[in-house]
Every structure is written in structure tokens, then in C-alpha cells.
Amino acid sequence: MFTISDIRREFDRLDGVTGLNTTDVPIRISARMSRALGVCRSRSTEGGGVEAVDVAFADYLCRCGTEEEFLNTVRHEYAHLYNILHDGIRCGHDARWKEVALWLGASPDRLADYRDLLARARKAEALPKRKTEKKPVKPKNCRK
Image (cartoon, rainbow, N blue to C red; front, side, top):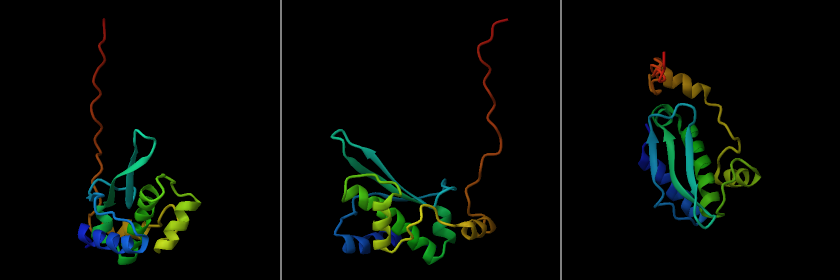
């Protein structure tokens, strides 16, 4: 099982490679994520720039992922963070992001093939439960 300390340790190592300081960027593990392994959230600033909000990783990745899957995802999200903090841009998965991802040792693919991880997580019952009941529809104000 991987923890926020493991993520921080890899971020610190990558900070040494890139020269960034990511210690102020919050890292969290989300039990709600089921369709992504990680996400780097950012927001626009008043001056037209971009700032990092946080980086989140799926709980099932941390609980059931292999070291390779885990490190690839951490490096993938760090590449997004690098583009935000170093370049001041959100570049999605474009050529600039791919260049940084490769430099950091991550796969340059937009999406990971994580079918095996999902199967392991389902077997371990580590995926978030989906709501199966639909919420009742409130009747609109009807006049007879």
C-alpha cells in the first residue's frame, strides 16, 4: 500500500531533478476517484496566470497498484504540475507535456491501461461504491 508519504518522497526526488519546490502543493488520496488514477488540479489567477490547487491520487491505485503503476501515475501528474509551476501553463497532454513526462520517467500516454489494476481493485473490493438508486424526482409545482 502506498501513502501520501510515498508520493511526497517521489515528488521531492523529482524536485531535485527539476529544481522546483512542490512542498506547498497539497497532495491527497481520494476514495471517490474511480475513472482516473490521478489528477492535477489548477485554477486561473486574476493576472491571467495559472496556479496549482492540489494533486490527487485514486485510493485504489494506492491500495492495489504495483510500484510501476504507482510511480508512472505520480510522475504523470508531476509532469502536469511542472507545466503549471515552471511554465505557467496548463498544456493537457500536448507535445510539451509529453516531453516533460518522458524526461521524468513517465509514459507519455494520456491514459494508462489500468484494466489489470481495476480487476485487482474489484477483487479486493477497493473501488468506490457507485450509487445504484436514483434520487426521487421532486414534483414541479403543478396546477390542476
